[in-house]
Amino acid sequence: MLVLSNLVQGVLPPAGAPAGELSGFLAANRERIIAAIFIRLFAGLAFVAFIAGLRATLDREPRRGRFLAAAAFAGGLVVIAGNIGASATLAAAAYRTEISPSLALMGTLVTATHFFYICSGVGLSCLLLAAFAGLAGTPFMPLWLGWLGVGTAVADLALPPIAFGNEVYVSGTVLLAKLGWIAVIGVLIFRDRDQPYDQA
Image (cartoon, rainbow, N blue to C red):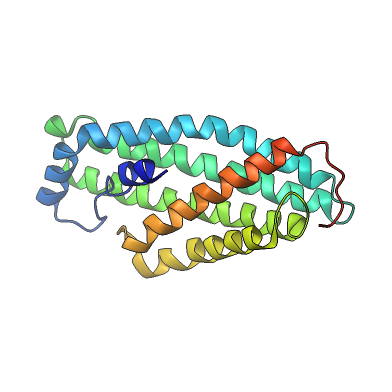
């Protein structure tokens, strides 16, 4: 996961960078940016299976299950849509920087990429909070893991207004926490999908 974090972090130039600096960054990091885009897109295929499994598990919760399942599923769809939008705008900015007709257009595309990632983070926050509300304390989510999800959800909601347009150091830590949370919950859900929904 650290390798993935190092690859996808630092491939997004600041939204407010001067046009010449922005063009140089995109040209110098083109291969790395394109690789990160495709990693995110292919990871989205696994994420589809994850949100489907999470929804099915939340549906089994005897109280508020359908509402929380729907909220988590909707949040997951926002994550996927945000990543697709961000991948499209960043690819458009980086793919042929040497023949771009407009440096201003590249800046607009990069700013749009930042915003799409914020939308994705908000969707993931909804998913994390719905999962916590429905699963915390059950065999599918130990309390420590639930609170980790809540912490990353709060970070995803708090960071954008503070650091919009820039990747800050803490965002890499938050990314690793999110990936770890998804990996552990995914294993628990698919391993114990036939387990009774009793409180731990």
